[in-house]
Amino acid sequence: KTGFTGPIQSMISQSPQKSVLFIGNLSKVMMVYYNLFFFFCVPKAELQIAEAIALVNTLQNWTVLDKIIIPTKNPDKKFVFGKGNFQVLTEKIKKLPRVTAVFLNVERISSLTKKELEDAWGVKVFDRYTIVLHIFRCNARTKEAKLQIALAEIPLLRSNLKNEVSQLDQQRGGSRYIMGSGETFMETQNRILKEKELKIRNALEKLRRKRSLLRNQRRKREFPIISVMGYTNCGKTTLIKALTGEAGLQPRDQLFATLDITAHAGYLPSHMAVIYVDTIGFLTDLPHNLVESFSATLEEVAYSDLIVHVRDITHPETILQKATVLSVLKNLNIPSHLLDSMVEVHNKVDLIERYKPTEENAVAISALHGHGLEELKEEIEKKILTVTGKKILTVNIHLEGAQLSWLYKEATVQEVEVMPEDGTARVKVIISNSAFGKYKNLFPNSTIFMP
Image (cartoon, rainbow, N blue to C red; front, top):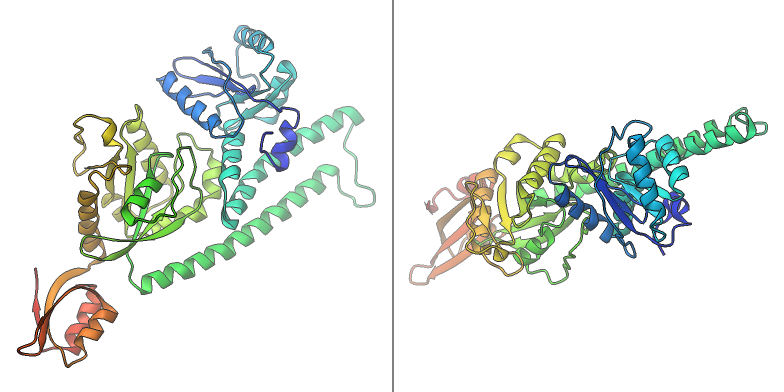
């Protein structure tokens, strides 16, 4: 069983098994999974093969059979390989009877290239877009994530339609009009796809407006929002679970385990309540259409008060992964002040003996074992106080008045030290600039102690 549904299921219904063959050179690596090849335009081919294997292993019942490195031509051209290498590859595939699909690790291959390769090899051929899309499909839990995946699938459906119509034309000698409609088969199917796309976009827009309303409600309560981001499988969910103590969070050791924006309440050392937002992970050369489809979800990040960038510091390509995340964030038009105030977290330091961050202001932690979490919370609190304009201060109040109840309602009360002899109390609070201004107007005679 492959687990595929929809148009992807029809593409591989004849491929009950899956195997992988890797092919590439020092600058490009191709791997074949169940007849699948991955291309990587990165110097360290072995590391890119490892990531490609991780992608396929994310899919249940998919297995990597073999790997080989050979030179490739421009993947945008009709033929990906030169004649000699194409023949070598074809012979190798024929000698692997268990291979049932080939994965080319390029963002997209044309329908023409796909057909040529499938005819030559006798197995299904997939590109990075198709594989990542299916991983997303398997991990989607909410209505919004499923709609976003359906939207990302539209280009695939259009490509398949073009290929099918081309084959029909060859068989029948030309396009056929739908009886009485005045439309060709191609025109009818394209119209249906446009209508489907519009329907999905409208549904996503409704969900976006609902999310905007919820966001405004959180802002009215002045909860700081902290978006936790990073390369896929860097430990974001594990970190949020450690910071919040939320037992219901179940991190999974796989790529793209989180696709939906989820919010989780936590507290900083000063007892300030904050919201941690878990986000989708990033991947090198993540297909453009998938990023575009999930942009509505990722726009939540732009409304955050702070971004925490989590890095798997044990990964050999951790620097490249950092560059990938920063590049995607910039392409999403994240406000510059969020990028400038970002907290960088080096996770999984328990796997490196005596690790010390080389980057300035980076915080070293082990989310799994809890190392460095207090230092991280202190750094987050410092940044939150700066970006939100909140203050930590102490005020003297009269217990008979309305000051204490007002502070409990409008600010975060941390400590109350009662002095019964004169009927007063010393109250330590976290308060926003706007609330602080209101307090001074309402209670002008109150004594205020700034830290």
